[in-house]
Image (cartoon, rainbow, N blue to C red; front, top):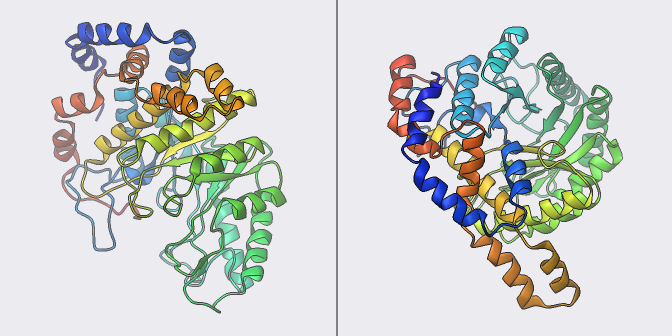
Length: 424
């Protein structure tokens, strides 16, 4: 389904007067308004192909229908999201869930919707149909060299699919780990992983990156072979300049200071990017900003400061992607809300009075530093985000328009209520 441009224009016309009033009020207090708006308009977040269907739990899925039945329909849904918010101009594929059988046709479809392909993701955390060897006891760290070779070849196959789609990065997440003490030799498991990644790294095209993700637990509950940012950083440092650490917000133990991790990885030039989500207890895959929006803001505070210090392009030099898929929301509405939360946090970070903050930090004025941060955080920047969206041709209120046009009902009418597995 495609949303006609005139529908968006009609929606905006009824909200424009109030929006203008709100934007002018907020904008009048932003000294660097032009720069902020330029950056907000350029900032896009990739949509993963696996998030377009209703997510699941270990007990099952409860889809509402109208979910995409093919890669083509997933791309169409991302095109719909991008039409609504003008901030989702790329899609990230997970192989083998979404193998592009005809790359030229797939690229043409995406381009027609204003989309391109973000990082491609490999999958060695579950056995696939007709797979020769099992990943029950791991993949790239496995004690059996034949299993490691199979996992290496899969990652190289994923790179080749990505080359066909003009992607520029391979994202690697491993479930490799152990469930019981004594099950693994930690040192040998890490060395096996490094050697496996070195073979994959050697297959990367010259202009590609490898993004190495980490996770402290699940599905293994005693140890994970790449359990934290330090282990990912160690691997990426040993591999070379094309390898960097990918931060998934949900992949941390409770209370972890993620913003400090981000700051240090940026300082070392080893921050690949983000998988955005939110969590209350663990890796809950909740809508971004739904639980702890202040932490999201603090992360973006470090991101903006660190990227500016290094002279980086905010929109291009780091990978930004959603990785959330819960089972009780319409997946498109969930993604729209997540993108909005990210852009709000980014906008808040952009309006921080950096000079006052630095002065407070240098003079150890702790109270003043808090005042500066919370002044930005408590500013309602939604009109700025909406104005950036309006300027790019999107809807002032994307979720409201999605519902007004009965998009889900129309998708159910087109596709029916049966769904295919997203792999989740």
